[in-house]
Length: 141
Length: 160
Image (cartoon, rainbow over all chains, first blue to last red; front, side, top):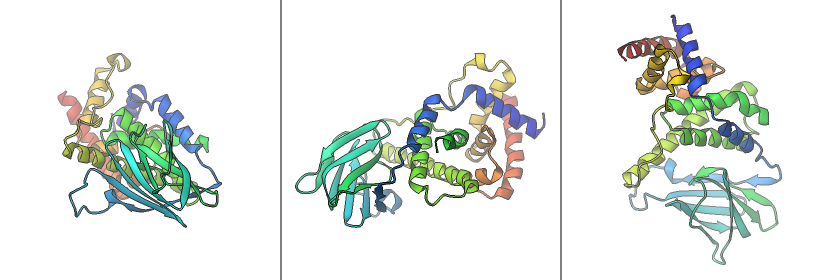
């Protein structure tokens, strides 16, 4: 069996024992249908996982910051939940995950607390003061 | 857009499997990669660059996931759902003994070889340029590495 034949054989083995599960394909389709043109994407301006860790306290928390125009969102994710300080938006925050969403009111002090996330892959949808929708990119809490 | 998911999902799956991720983690990698694509649709416009972009993004997702697992482990939390071995093998699916040996041997390859071979096994087979982007290696090195890794695989399979 030469190299090409061996690779073909391996491919046929993978096709038999490790096919991509149907639910993964369906989830991929669902992900592709989440695109909405009427919303503004906030930019990730800080991610503690991308920064060198100088301070070892707080090392469990994943700290992220998002911004767009007047809207800012500072997120601390840890222990399966998250806290976020929201500026420039009011009402509620929709915490979207691949398995469903959670709606949480923004407190008078701007804080949002989600004790338990349904899934670690998350994005936040907010409503700007002028009514326009803003979403953060997807991130891992 | 939905149709895009079809041909590329096996490519992303093969990248994630190369990192020894379990089924649930592979699924997360695939899905997160698609979610990121949706955000970047404006900037990834050339179809011939799409696969390479997806493959690179999938690799980063794998690395991020492994880093998360490492942090959790450092914090002494419960063991993560990672590094569960290749899917359990139902011998009925692989009648030939040689096939079983080959499949098990893939999992015993060193990291670099396993990632490469796993991607070469994807259906449809990804072009070398996509493999190179996904694994962050030079396109020119794939041919020689492929030969070397397949040789190791043959030896491992024979030992079993």
